[in-house]
Image 1 (cartoon, rainbow, N blue to C red):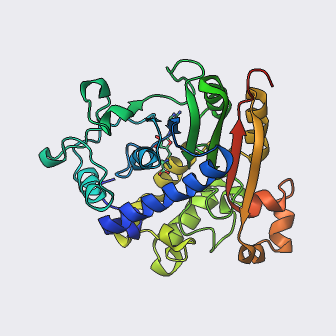
Image 2: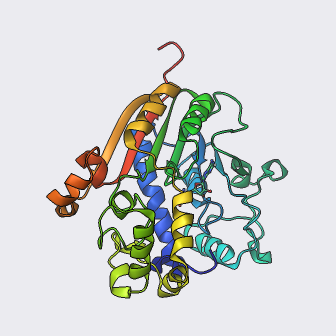
Length: 323
Ligand SMILES: C[S@@+](CC[C@H](N)C(=O)[O-])C[C@H]1O[C@@H](n2cnc3c(N)ncnc32)[C@H](O)[C@@H]1O
């Protein structure tokens, strides 16, 4: 991601603060449902190493008292270490939040994955690893707390991920998860700008029609800038790039989405053995106006909650052994 996708990423300090904000949202859920980070061994599932901010939320758990924190992603943290946008992000994070990573002055981001080499209080406690969340190589019962943001809609095997989270979670431990169900108006299709021009295009249109819709929206700043939330407004440079081949953009988006629905997510979690402490639909009431009778008739088989939810939050607990 050399060129920023969204406007707020153009200002690196804003981008760092926005990531910290994302951490606060996760932290609120972890405090409420998982007993907080303090003294815990923590795992972030899908830390996002291909993105400049990938790993910052994992590191910030230490500020909150985590004993050790691990971040995993199918992307490798090393592969992106020398990217200028990653280095700039982590330099800003060091300045703003005092989160230090090694190599910054040499133009690299090293999370010290081989953390046994360091005895520094911070580094010996953070480990970033490339690993599939559906085939983790951690031992059983290792983590007290897990969290994950915007990952469950992307993993090819959500059921397998929940099984692995259960296996590696300590009895009594809990996970807090935010993700974007495929049915969601705002983020379900990940089709920037379209949801408010043609709501639920990804559920209502054929592939060819959806590509045509993308072509139209990406060619017109007045249309792609209707993104909501506004931070999802893409930059003109990125819109131009995507508009050059809307079919390819559509393919990249669809290949990266597993079409997961809330009911399936909850069923997989229970099947894995988790107790569902919380399942939350986050609905902005002003979005209801998009669910007209016409649209509703086209979307039979989906309920209002899953269509209107901006994201879904879940808290899952692994019961104690003697429970
Ligand atoms: C939209 S990003 C979210 C990153 C970060 N959590 C955030 O909030 O910005 C989704 C991430 O899921 C990761 N991912 C997809 N499939 C995965 C898998 N099987 N195991 C681990 N990570 C995976 C991707 O590589 C990507 O970094």
